[in-house]
Amino acid sequence: MAELVQLRLEYEVPELEEMKRVGLFSLSEIRKIVKRREAFEYKLRRSKKRKEDFLQYIKFEMSLLMLVSKKRERLMIESKKKEIDNAIAQKINRLFKRALSYFPEDEKLWLDQIQYCIKMKWHDSINALYTRMLQVHSRSPELWVMAAKWEIEDNNSPDNARKLLQRAVLMNPKSE
Image 1 (cartoon, rainbow, N blue to C red):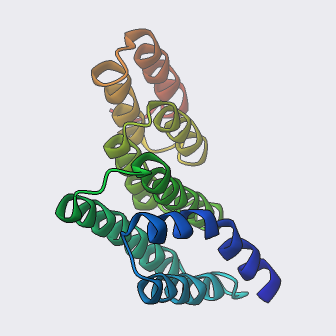
Image 2 (spheres, rainbow, N blue to C red):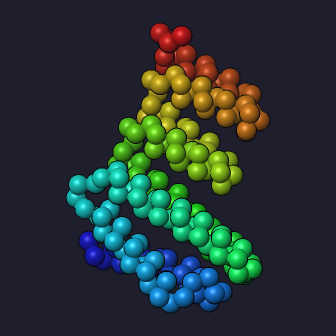
Image 3 (tube, rainbow, N blue to C red):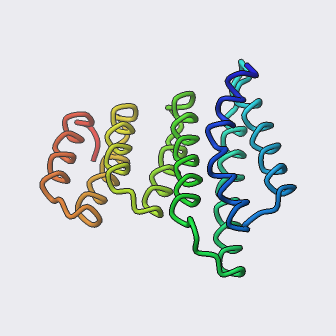
C-alpha cells in the first residue's frame, strides 16, 4: 500500500518543484501540501472506500487551485501558470474518475464532475462523461434531458441532442 501512495506522490514532484521555484510556496508550505496529500492517499487506499474521503480530497485540491490563483494575483507571478494550474486541475479530474470507479451509482458525483469540467471548459471530457453516466443511469430521464440540453446549448450539436432524446425514449418508454 505504501509503495502505491509514494508512487502517486512522486508523480506530483515536478509540479511542486515548479511551485517552489517560481515563488508561489515556501519549502515548508510544500511539505504541508505533501503531508496532506499523503494522508488523503492513505485514506483512499483503505480496503473499505468512503465517498467522503474522495470528496474531501477533491475539495482540498480545489482549494489549493484557488490558493495558487490568488497567490499568483497577489505576487504577480505568471511563470509556469499553465503547467502548475493544469497539473492540479487534471489531478482533480483524476480524483473524480477514481471516486466514480467506486461509486458509479452516485448521480450527484457524476454531475459534480460534469460541472467541474464545464467550469474548466473541457468539452471533450463533458461529452465522454455524459456518455458514461448515461450508460450507468440509463433509467433516469432527467439525466438524458440534461445531456441533450448540453448538446444543444453548449456543444452546438442539435443532431447529437436529437439522438440522445431518441435513445432516452427507447430506454424509458413509460416516462412522460
